[in-house]
Image (cartoon, rainbow, N blue to C red; front, side, top):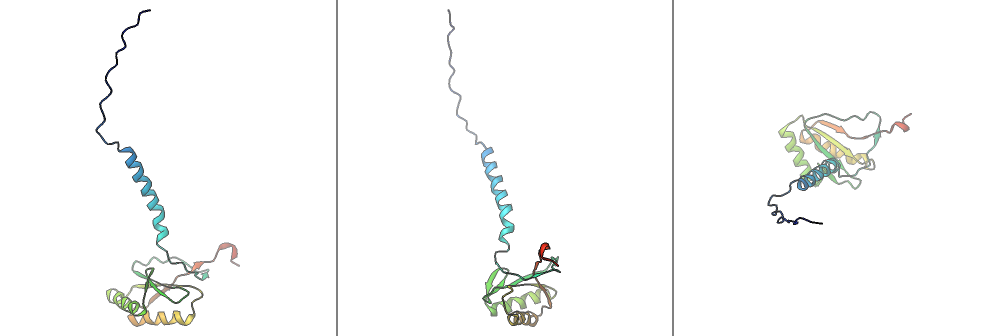
Length: 143
C-alpha cells in the first residue's frame, strides 16, 4: 500500500482580535439585574401603613415624600432628617412651588398627635396639599 506524504501545515496564527460576544453577554446580564433591582430600591423604608378601600395612586408631577417611622423619626425622600432641617426643607419646597404636594406615609402605630404636628410644620412652611399614603385593602378581606 502506498501512502502519500502527510503534509502538516503550520499552526494557524494567533488571533489578535478581542472576542466581543462574552463581553456583550455579561453586559446584558448586568443590565437585566439592574432593571429588576432598581424598582425594589425605591421604597427602602419599611412602614406598616394602614389599609383603606379608597386608596389610589396619585399622578402629581411635583411632590415631596415624607415618612414617619414607629419611633417618630422623620424621613424626607427616605433619608432621615432632624425636625429643624425638615422645616427648612419644607420652606424651600414651598418657595420653589407652592402647589407642591406632600405625600405623607406614617406607620399606623405613630400617635395621631405626632402626625398632626408634622402637618402643622408643613402648613406653616406654606404647603397646603397633603396626601396620605396607605395600602389598599386586600380583595379577600373586603366586606
